[in-house]
Each structure stands twice: as structure tokens, then as C-alpha cells.
View 1 (cartoon, one colour):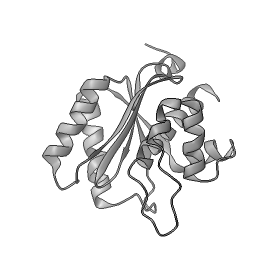
View 2 (cartoon, rainbow, N blue to C red; view 1 turned 30 degrees about the horizontal axis):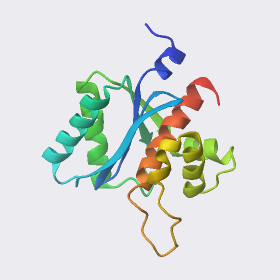
View 3 (tube, one colour; view 1 turned 180 degrees about the horizontal axis):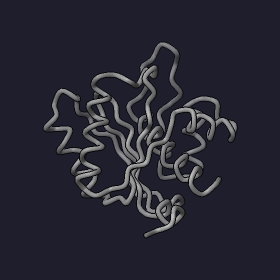
View 4 (cartoon, rainbow, N blue to C red; view 1 turned 90 degrees about the horizontal axis):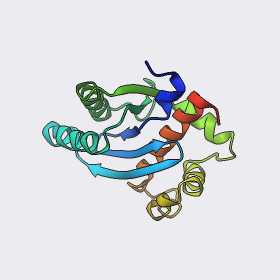
Length: 170
């Protein structure tokens, strides 16, 4: 059996699930970024969501799947997001992937400790650490604008970075 730190250094996939999209970021080790992306699929289209999740898992072949632990009072806790979350858990088990959960406060604390108080500041920190993400970074959002779909990629990458920091230290 692998040690906890050896498990953290394997290939891992962080997924940010929402009711209408799945964003992912894949890493070989915490310092080796592999790929990222966003796939649009409504939670009501279960067949399409299953196909896209399976395609991501087959392509990346992760040892660990990192998901956000969403509290009952969170704005992310919608019926559609819960459906996508369950699909992610089901596929991870089917592919024999270990599931790791990271809490929202854990992510916030990790990035606030580095001086990033907003999601955009955290995304900027992630682009400094992983320059491959730079071209995915949208412009800063105005208060009246919706969040850009690419920000979900940075949410997924933040999950992965927080997971690594929680298992191996900063």
C-alpha cells in the first residue's frame, strides 16, 4: 500500500462540478500540470454527462479524484450540481479512482494565507505557478457580469493545489 504522500504525488484530477458544466484540471505531480478544460452539459442530460465524465477519466487516468465538499448551506448546493456530483462519484468508483474531498473553507484558507482574498486573485496565483493556465484566465469580472465559464477551471486547479498542500504541506 502506498503512503499518504505517495498517493498525493500520483496523477490526480480535480473536478469542479456545476449544474451545467464540468471543469477539470489534471496534474501528474503537484508541479506538473497536464491539462484542463470545461465541458458544457446540463445535469438533466445524464447520458451526455456520463459520456463526458468517462471520456475525461479515460484520457487522464487519475489515481485520485479531487472534489469539493459542498455544505448544505452553500450556493453551490443545487439539485443539478448534486446530480453531477453523484455522477462523478459513481464514475470514479467505476474506474477504481480514490476520491478525495476538499472543503470550501479549506480552499479559502489556503489562498487567503497566500494573500489571495478573491477568486480572481487566487486565479492569478495559479497562473504564476502554472503558466500554461495563463491563456485561460478571463478578464476581471464586473459586479453586474456573470462569472466567465473558464473560472471553473481555476476552481478545479485550486482544489488540486489545496489538496496537495493539505497532504504534503505548502
